[in-house]
Length: 205
Ligand SMILES: C[S@@+](CC[C@H](N)C(=O)[O-])C[C@H]1O[C@@H](n2cnc3c(N)ncnc32)[C@H](O)[C@@H]1O
Image (cartoon, rainbow, N blue to C red; front, top):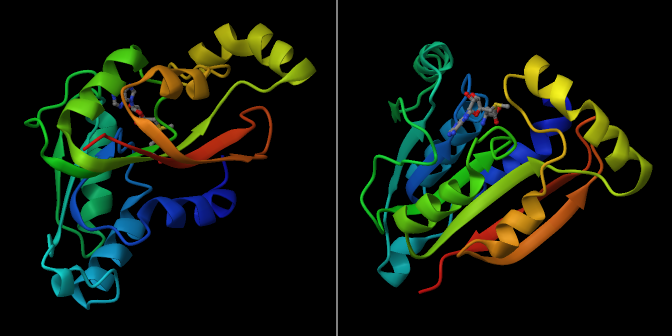
């Protein structure tokens, strides 16, 4: 997936970040430049001026990544940015954080690879504070003929693309999760991993 195509969507995920932010499945740290810009903007007061309404939570960044090789690459990427991020070797199905401790969880092209997405949604819901949000960008199974072609190629794709499910029903998983979706857009992406969904879902207060 080309980074040029993803740029706008990564910006969407990193817009006006504040509080305790968690990058789920950081990979090689492709979200980090966007987090770094958000951190600079936040420290310069360009984001939401939360201090005026007494809810200034600053910005702290943490990330999880289960693949040690990817985690090392993410650490290297973080060191190349003005970015302070606490990276841990962990899976979304078992998040190493207390409940109600995260303001914003970011899922960027990761639910397609999570082995137990229902468990991961339960964990995200556990660690989000009430009112906290999940921001997501995920490719999903297409409708029509392309969907049937994706079904056909999914087993080979899973082997070639490090466990990625080409035909995952992220919309259905999200709808059945404890989170409430408030924003969801369908985005046409380069095949075969098209379309994508991007949006936000909240944990009930
Ligand atoms: C396609 S990459 C996306 C990386 C990054 N989020 C991005 O936007 O480019 C998917 C990542 O999810 C990680 N991953 C796989 N299983 C996971 C799990 N159960 N929990 C969290 N991350 C997982 C993979 O190791 C990989 O680094």
